[in-house]
Length: 237
Image 1 (cartoon, rainbow, N blue to C red):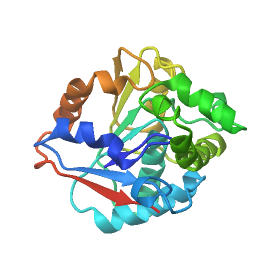
Image 2 (image 1 turned 180 degrees about the horizontal axis):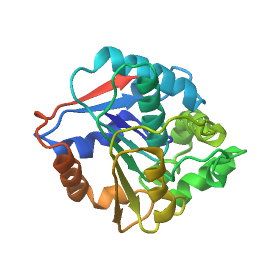
Image 3 (image 1 turned 90 degrees about the vertical axis):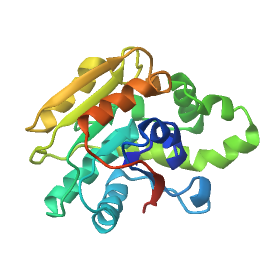
Image 4 (image 1 turned 45 degrees about the vertical axis):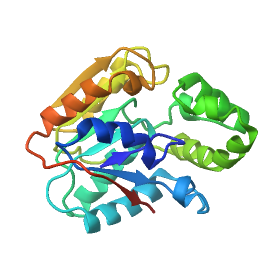
């Protein structure tokens, strides 16, 4: 199950889904306020999103599964896994945490945006496909509500103390990511009692675009034995 980054949508994971086929089934979360849910108000709170996601995952997913989250999605994957554990509702067998520093009690300074200009500057700094899209004023007006909410969600997120998880983590990070250094990403190892592996790729925050085959192989190798791949969407909340 894949969790998109701030401003991202379920379709973000179409390329990864194709790269994982036919070995793995891929389910992507669709946050409110974008694409087919664009008329719904976006949610600006990580805890609220994780709470609804944990309920949906417990109801919808059967058998063995893993979470893959990039950037904001990594935080949501982690917090959703914690809630599932705390509710004794099962949970993923592994977390794939991409492009995100390990949680801290104080929000990361890179997440603290106070104006639309701050948000737009941050998005352009991170790169990926969104900056070019934002050059169109009509498109920009359409996506800004979701971007505002997502950056508010990560900007107000504060890690709460609790027992570490007991499942393996796979941490992926770009060697020139401006918001998550390799050392900061590797610190995820402190949040599980199981093993943590750290893979470093060349590139920035959206290193995934240039390394899909390698990432798909790494994920498949970790989850060998899972059945065929289809892409679908889980809406939450």
